[in-house]
Length: 122
Image (cartoon, rainbow, N blue to C red):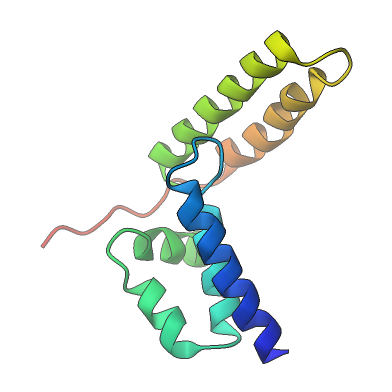
């Protein structure tokens, strides 16, 4: 099982890295998933992610409070809006409704999460 979590953690991290460059692919949720997997397979890799200057505070905010930063909520909303516009322009009925439904369900869940923890400045 440890190997499964290790491979899953690396796969999640790889797809999350691709998401840093692909507009509609989420990065932070995949890094949080990688931290979850590494917590069950490699304490060293988990510690590396928790101490990462970009992603560490997002992981800790999610673990401690189930929190999503305001910036993350806005970015998700923009991505939802973009996918809705694309679907309305290019997808036939009834497939054009899929992003609208996903945005309604996913967006309402995202906006009901607490705000992320503020990053401490040194």
